[in-house]
Length: 428
Image (cartoon, rainbow, N blue to C red; front, top):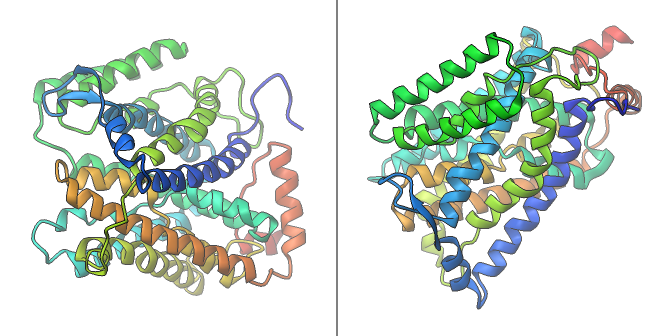
């Protein structure tokens, strides 16, 4: 058991909160679809687009409930993503080159193949090429929620593999948003944002550890980014890189580390409030009048195929090749059918795909709705197929021994370390 004097490991909290939060996200998405297709559909839309605040930038106009969720609360989501990325690279499962190899290969292939498939199916249609990144993302919360429904049928090594792939995937998504979905730049605001980030790094070097100071500067950075033309949520990732961090390899997180304290503090709010709220605000699609021609139009078809077919081809294919060529070891205690099941679950794009869909077609409500249809269809098929494969896949012969080791290390808040099959053989 972890000590009451400080926070538990971020790994243990992550696995627990993402699984439970993922199930809540699934519920929120289903609820949004029910409401949008009920007598309350108009009320749902009016609520989302109700003007609630001032004009923060002429580009967005008056702030609405939908804008506060997508441009405001999602910046906090990206702040947590940034904290997780930084911790994993400095003190976690991506700290060593050998730990990064398989997740990086799988994530890169899992983004490239869906994007290529989308461009092949929809990219030749005028005005649709900019949606290439929509099927490239993986929704870690949704996927972990599905894994949670499977209980012990999903090996811990595969849960950790999914987490690390999704974190690398998030890095790619952040880079894509910053590089490819940035509007005309306001250089003065961008300079102000750069100055704020510089000041945050400076106070870090000077030993300032007060989270209140960093959070205040994060709010200023968010507003500067909002004005700059770079999407405001990128402020969350940039701010995360400046938060002071105490390394604690193989031990519970430090009770005095600002990064650890902020990450533990944000996890429940993001998992149980912000992400489900985003899902509810963005998943509501009226499917009552949909025709087969609309469902199989180039945009939804390209996205759905990218998520369901592209993700499994990219991730499973790259893992299989990496293992066969001796580049990386297979996740310990997992069979190839189970690895294939997790590759299918990586096709659940949802949160990040919905987010990128809104950026890809700004001001084009029809194409945003078509993108939602493709995202929901591809994610739903990937989730159902992934669940079915993992539900009936045979267990590895060493499943019990490997699971007992992982369980003991996670419950003791220790470092799980290398989860590859080669490492397990060395231990044995």
